[in-house]
Length: 161
Image (cartoon, rainbow, N blue to C red):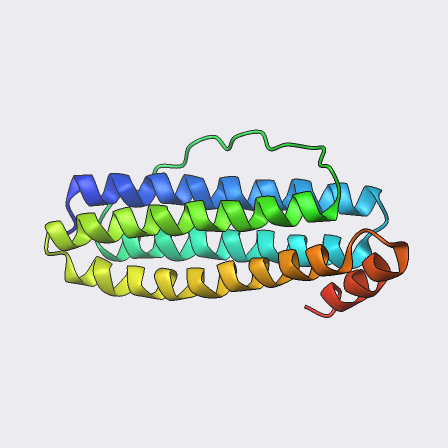
């Protein structure tokens, strides 16, 4: 059985994952409106991953006999200052999510909840990939600048995700 405190923490993260999905869908809509189809594809795929993460957390609670309680998602930003600003926000957001998982791990360790620790290890490993991917795109955008040809080539690359 999982403690109520741990279940509450995981339920809060479920909401955060759906918030993340909504943020990425908003970024995808922004890119679609700017005709950056590859960047729109990348952020839409990211949104789907976040929803899968929420479902994984929900399954953990079900398996542990805890109740899933869904909360309303927050309204995301709709306007951005270009691709670099978006991907800087992606990186910042992923770093924030990582910090949330670290806090959950601290709680799981404090409670000696080994099952939740095992599940959280997967998410922490996943966050390393998420941050690295976002950072790589930020570095490319900073290197390439805002020339149309550079943005076009990066957009084509991100469409391959």
